[in-house]
Length: 118
Image (cartoon, rainbow, N blue to C red):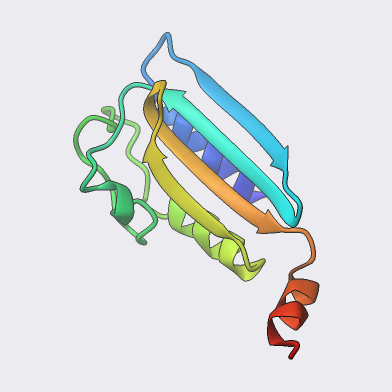
């Protein structure tokens, strides 16, 4: 449950009104992909790789007075994705804000066995 809420909460908290938040799921051959995109503001390109670091907070464009997070939300999202042998990536959204992409394998145990098979 924190996985889903942290992703959506970030977009709700940091998207300027009247903004746009788009949520989509895509079925892949070996898993599912969740994408959450929002409108402005975005984060700087140099901050994108740091967004999943524990306790990292962007203190410029995506911070509003009275709405400061702990800096743990996206690191929790990444930890949950990795615990399921998936991944999470942050990029700039074409909507002007942030795009978070989470990939989760459908059957990670089977994929691991295929990788190890001679």
